[in-house]
Length: 229
Image (cartoon, rainbow, N blue to C red):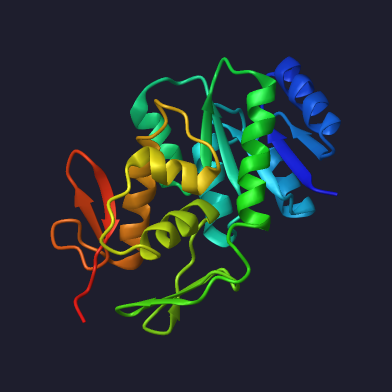
């Protein structure tokens, strides 16, 4: 059974989310402190973490960093902070999505399902390996090699890179990339793509001012650089 770890110090909210997720067929583990959540993550290796930013014991940001140091477990950040910098900071830590309070429990379940679909299915099984410059993107193996060296990407980062690399030279809007990566797109969340692109560029060693892979189409979105034969 798929296991979801909820790390949230609001007990009533945790109980509501637990009830909705269990009703959807998930096994749920609860933690009301960051340090306790880290212990449970290490012990149970859940399939996805719902992580609040403001936690006693260990801040959600520090906890996300701890997880990302060794693992690519999908993370959905939950926050009451409405400041866009905080939202993007969560994504820059490698989070796959974020949700701001207050929210509908049904929306949380939908987000969980969408992220897990990307992990489980992500791409068509018959997709061919894509080779561009020194990159090799394998949809079936779910791997990215750069000059033969493995590059670790989150499911969201992988989906965004693959979407663009499949159509080099084509400009994708932020909403289109959000839809490709998550299976749905909400206006107001499309700026989160900027954080994922920033992460991709950092991991690929790509310079935004002189890009080798990902180009910015100002006012429009992003595209994978088309290399002339």
